[in-house]
Length: 361
Image (cartoon, rainbow, N blue to C red; front, side, top):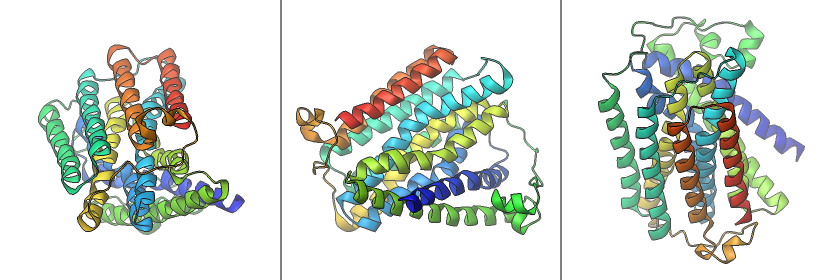
């Protein structure tokens, strides 16, 4: 068991460190895109690759309902973490480092991203009711395309924070040993030079390392599930989802420290949109094309007993309902209240209630 815990720590560490070089490469290649657009698209996609990899690997590694439920749990758990923990973590870092409560959040971003995310969760719930079929996966992917298009149309002329021409040319160095330890990929093969070619190479290398880390997480969660006798759904929800969300957290916190509050906040919503629509939709598109419709009424061994009385014990649907409630409440808090310490505490409390509700079901 110690070995498995170490594997999870190493995998999480790689996902954490590789996100820095990946973010630098992605930001270079998209350096002329406005802050309000890049956060929920480029940054969100870059930081959400672990969820896509994990859901795909679970689905095709097991090739059955068990794999689907584990990947689904990862997406749901990651989405709850993103919407609650990431904005709060970003706020707390700014609050601590700058000794200020002034955390700027654009209400237009909250309203637009929040409504799209709520719509995505409702769409997902439809799949839980009627089954995951090929046309449903098309709907998820199309919905994400509409979301990105809407962001572009509404924010392309309102990007006061973009710094066009501010081109990063060199990645900082901490010495050879620390460069290796911190996985500073630009420093390891291009002497820190950042350009289009090196950025593309870094992105490819990062994807390979992310895939390797996700494989470590999957095998570890599967081992823990067998060892402790808890369904893989729950182990994936508590371990794989949180580990895969750390790149999102670090990128958002970094943006907040640098004063990019819009990117920091909207990245959480954009990551959830990518997780639900692409992280689930893309692998399910391939899977349902081959194996047909997935019906979600199959039994999953639950921890609690609430499911004995409602929803026929369908924990997949229950988790989506809880995520919808959490998303609506937190979005309303972000929209109607300035993000202050007391509201940050309230949001974390709601996140804990979300996890408790899943356990008690």
